[in-house]
Image (cartoon, rainbow, N blue to C red; front, side, top):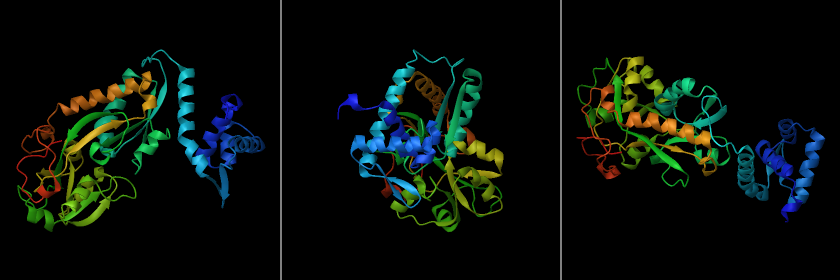
Length: 339
């Protein structure tokens, strides 16, 4: 197929059709009439020699050929848009931009909250939209639904996208301050005997890094409650003998919301290494790079601060030790696992 035969507007229409899977909604997005959008779909089918979208019930379903076109068309249009914009730089004091970030409530608390407060003064024209976590964070970046993703490296070990290490953290046990079932130390016997409150990583995946690790180590717990946000943990622990594990750097925030206390886990738990991910098409974008740098500054301040100030636990070196293997799960915890 010769490029001279291709109308760029057809590719714009194809991108919207594949996203909406509806001629009516695609027409609304592009400001066209429904007959005009139908005519555009006919031209696209003729251009590619494929139906592209076929009706299945009340919706349109992309053909395999259409699915193969989705990502390259989206990336090509993004590059063309970037070339057309071609701004020499980014002035945070006067420029306007909107960025979408997918992250956990933990990252929202530790990073995005401080970021928004700083942007209010440094970049009043920037808007941050936060998306909840999804099972396939790479797809969000690939399809342009998110500009940035913040996730632990431990759950995205093989992702071949640009990334930046943000900060390290570790897990600690959290219990209601008034429980009499737990003394000054959390023993393995107590840890296994008490009921547990756990929170899922994403909707539809009711396990976290810790849950996966303990399952692999064959450490059986009695899980009584599962919630989608660790921020709910201190409230749900009140008046119970339940135990939860929470990131230590968040402990100070949690303590201010409810009467809870923190203890060393009775076994080594995996590290948390928060990472920032983005699609390579955004790497040289001035506004995107400026925002990444601001997030990195906040993360660096966190990483240089010992999280122990939030708890009553002894200080640990978050960088010095290797990540423990599942075979070490039954060993008593003397020092924190490395990040």
